[in-house]
Image 1 (cartoon, rainbow over the protein chains, first blue to last red):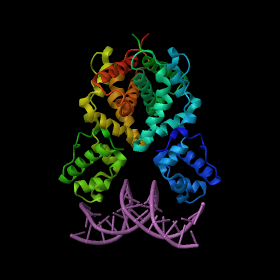
Image 2: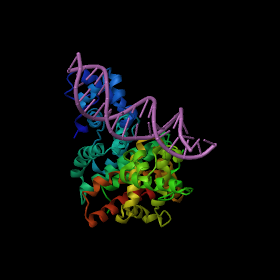
Image 3: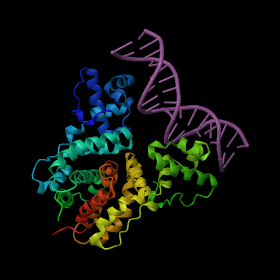
Image 4: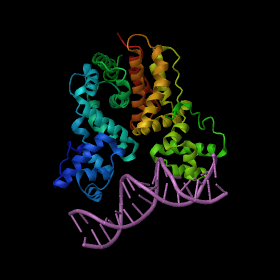
Length: 194
Length: 194
DNA sequence: GTCTATACGCCGATAGAC
DNA sequence: GTCTATCGGCGTATAGAC
């Protein structure tokens, strides 16, 4: 099974040859622009100036190619080491920061790719490694792992619904109020009220 | 644009002929079992005992067929009219009730189908109509519509992550604690703490 | 005119020729 | 090692049967 997380962005390690690099770069770009199902191997090969079979030869399958080049780890770098009592707010600030649009887009692409079984498992693994395994041990009180998963679920839901919500909170002030509101809801799981 | 919401389950209104009914019933079943991309028009036609072109003739496109027969409205019926101060808990109880597995499955199928642009817009419209427009007017205080959207985002995220979370909270007690935890986080958006 | 079998242009993936 | 040819499957358009 491919490993989304091990891919540095935009080009993973161990891509020695120029052809492999070209394929990886154009695949990275096209997947981010058009999503998993929207970008075809033929598109990617054409953009990289190679035959489609060369892409298959080097990356074995479309799913593996996607996992190798999507580079979510390099984009998704929330600070999970700060003070716990303000982490909810900080997490959502990070998630919705206008400067982090590329991370958000990568997150969105990954969420939508969850239609495919193999990529859905990748999403679960990545979320477990980047969120649950980092945040869970820091949480105090009972059900720490479950609460870390629920925080993750909140972030996934916000990213999934963001396109719709954004149209209703276009102003910077609206965005800030939204960060405060949703941040408080996330905080509820990080430091539950008694 | 097709309208997911107008479809009664499992067979929408205005499906007069036996052929239309057969197609709709098998489409409903196969979409629920295998998802939007997993169920092909040829599969559905074969199950219904007709030629694939007959399916196209009656439903115009795969997207429209999906929207007509998915029947989310008939499954997703949360109680949004009870007391506000316990609604967060009740919403999550409803969402995770073991008896509501078919609703959850329908929700999941709809979320995963959001890879397609047209169906993503359908998802947004359905969520707006079934959640935001019902809950928003009931919320007191500022940003009522935004908060209703954020509650919706929380529910979408929980459904999306549920498969992964479920494996960590298999017991009934674990599920109940989870309902209480996430319900409190949802409550934070329904009746924000001062 | 209504209906349907066939055909078209994609897709991901494979086998074999150079 | 690279490319050609091809496969089976997809959603969909259309020409032709009735």
